Image 1: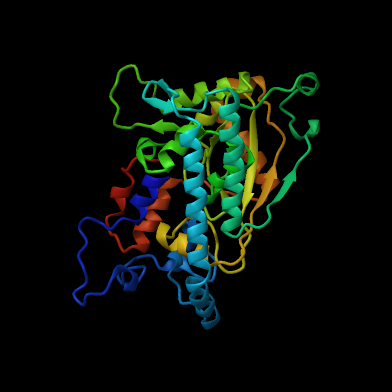
Image 2: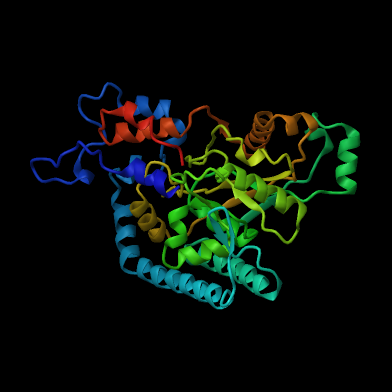
Length: 386
């Protein structure tokens, strides 16, 4: 996620500063000679288009009332929220530091974590992490969270026989992974407050101040693309093992996976990657929505700095969560991870009223490149997905 946004918002290497000294924020979103206008681009890449009052890339012309609200929030609300948020982050870091003292982290094939530390230390880390994550959401304006729990219905899944369904009810299996649509970095904060699962993160995250230790306590699986070790299974292999472990061991943290591989504007559901379904175990689908009137909390075509600033300036933020029943794969789905992934995707789209789209991260990069006036669109297709 972090590297993806760096790719999408970074300045092209061959670009030059305007002669009049204006900044990138002052320049048009599209070059005058662009063959596709903004409306055509938005129709083509609808899953990544911002539809709030802040406009495309958060750089639209704001009405006077919105400017007044922003100015007032900048001098009153933002400083308070920044101080409180940093306080919560530092407090949880200290808790993680204290309760991991004298403990050796689990190390396995270029992974390092404290997620499998048991006993009262682990309970303190998890419970305090869930509580403080909710506190942080409150600080950011999420004063209440609407959660809806759907009840399992045997008729909803025709691919399972009645005997299979009856067996699952009598002896329910623990899901090995939580499957969620991906709208914003705020998704992670919500899931931390709800179930405190493990995530997939870049290896560099483990070295970040404060965040690094917290990610190890979460049990994050770190992506090490540059590793050329012959015995390194790769992130897919590690994730599969973690999902299977969580399925079998109730004390192991579940994996939290975003199979779309990138964020959308919250109205669409992109094709699922199969990594979350290779373990052939049940999964728990969760659908997130961020209703808004002024500023959309989706992290789609807006820079991270602008997004955080506008988030802090919005007095009230909303999140709606729909938690579906545990999805038990049929024999056919266990044998075909693509079929399994597509069935879960269709279920989530139906239950969440989401539009299924076939575009992916590559198209997102093309859209961002066009908005930034980059003519070298084919080059973005050769960048690795994150």
